[in-house]
Length: 265
Image (tube, rainbow, N blue to C red; front, side, top):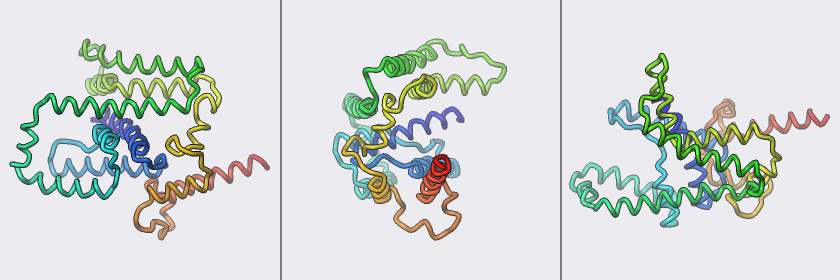
């Protein structure tokens, strides 16, 4: 379960950025990502209390559906969620989906996963693809992310440690393609020397989901309009210590500016 949670968290973070790009929204700030992971965790706890036997996490296929239909309105998804809750109580309605042929479901998955893959690859537009450093990191991470899980599935029980739980955790982690590839890319990108321009950090900071560059004030305004909660959250002085609230980000920005000022002095 612990390995599944780690893999789910990494997948969800990528899904949040992909959903923002397909919806035309700004890149999610830290407090929005924290709030998303917190909500998924609360959903898992609630599912365990109810006894459903399934956890709660983001679903990449739904993000692919946003790219296909070009419908990313929150109101539409909220109404659809209410309809699913109501119609889920009617067994006859569920039988309609059971009668859908498997080739049609497979075709939908191919389109949805293809859209998600394309969005993920499009993030490489920020990095310097002429750099041998970046080409090595991208190629090696993709290759290992595809081959290691298949090797683990073909050699079940190859992990032998004194702990049975440790064997299960390592096996699940190594069978998760995005975790293997993402972890290797993270390690190499932060250990192999490279400039911020070469790594794409400068372009990532200055652009809004690949659109026109924005200054700091415009980015904060766009993020507040999209990711702030619909009710005021600064009424409590302890809100700046809660990672899921916007004030937590503002506190970090203030601390960073103070440290920069002290360094210049």
